[in-house]
Length: 100
Image 1 (tube, rainbow, N blue to C red):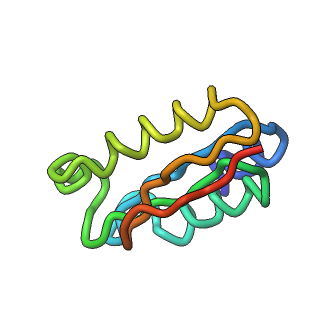
Image 2 (image 1 turned 60 degrees about the horizontal axis):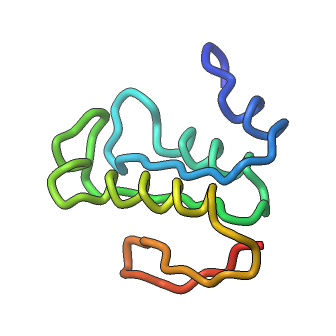
């Protein structure tokens, strides 16, 4: 990933992770954001949130609360007790997930 080896660093730590990106990001290519999310692997409580049509630092990231909800959900997943079921924001609507 070159100058910012986020994916390589993320692959070495085991923490709940959420990657939020704009599908029209002109600074960090969406493929790079997806690669960062993929580096989280199959670890529990990790999610990828795409904001359709959003550019880098685009107001669209804030307008409908997608970014804020993703951060709140990440905080919840980082502190959740094992074996609890919770609701996770996905672009196609909420879904239930299990975090262990």
